[in-house]
Length: 606
Image (cartoon, rainbow, N blue to C red; front, top):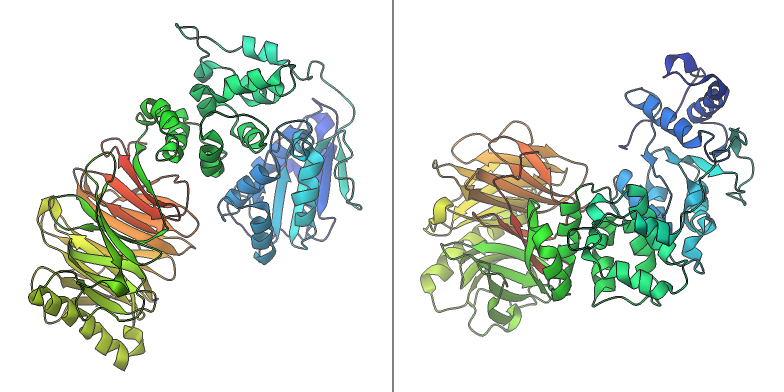
């Protein structure tokens, strides 16, 4: 649920204005609605009742009634069955707009959030997953580790379904909506044998998890942990790629967190990397396969190969990974050969081949301060590039952490050294006389259709964008004030019809488009309440495409001609991006480099 307004009401809401309830639910519904609208009452409401009494339905009724209704907003609804403290925190963080966070970080973010937050927590009494002898299997752990600390914050309120349990035991003064003791028979836990028997089989007698009933997929791993000889049953599930793709991600997360459980290969490490995204609501099994495959590439080759056919059916799939130091800067080198220039956290520059399936490094330089062949104009102190604009594989402009724009020329090429040095001197002199001219962003660009026409795009504190040709001498750049705030990222691309499109991001979370022969677009092409971490653009077979990375971890792919946007659910926050005309997206993040193949023909069909 998205963030909304403060929950207040001067007059108790009239239940007759909401969707009708059965006669026996009208009084409990009125009590729940009055509690939700009364910002001055108890901050916890317990929804009690036996199985089948309608508790979840009543919370769903409240949630549905708030949609589009001013003055009453449910900020998050987290069904808790099978969730542990960690997986609950991930889902709550996603719904509150923070991204998947650890419990400690989530509490910090909620504590700093200025919104009065109203939460719904169905099925708290069914929370818990994993081996029964561990605290994570008990709902009391979730209450103690996360729900109680949340409710200790004065701006957090929650309606919590607790069944007939005594949860939460330590919170006094809660409002109670009691639906009574009416119970539906047959709600006990099914055995592992019964659940396994309900899984259809393929023609070669393997479990067909794609066709298994949803309750079976959600509960069979927990059931396997309870049987005699559980090791064989659990290992059988963990070695089945089909179950990894279709089984309960929350149950798998809890089980794999137990180091006593034997796992094949490096599954525990792979799953841990993918779990925050896998536990989100990804209904498409191909997307789950793509996420798990992306985590396995470069880590567990056998698992990656098992998952590759299913992952390849999705609109994106990982191609290669180069685990290394965190990547701080990344750019496609202009030219017909698809090569990358990247800088890691130590300041070391490397180039990579991006056309093959391995992303093999082509060259590696020493750290920039020690570069013996570098131009004398390279900064004599330690250089840690945070963005790059390559001219070719041997020369580039760099923007380092001190906001200094620096030329790098690794061969004896006085002409190139003079041209790049001239650009650095131009902006250095401007920043010396005008504080708003301080360089805050640097990006590269390449001519469309493989034409070698390299660019550098410089953004400054005053919101202006400056486009330089790196292929021919320019005395001054093409410049325009595009943003009201400092520029945080920039990139440009030539299109097949002769346009030069410049994309830039501002500190206010806006992304803007400027075609350099005309005025910038009057409104942003995208606006979000987050900081842009990276931009990349290419002229592809379907027209210009822009990739945008955000500080909350979202990665957007924007089809420029139609304005359609698709979110790529990447495993980590990206810090650098590069995009080839063929649709290979290279992501630099805390774990190194990863390459993702985009199926441009189907990317924006849905």
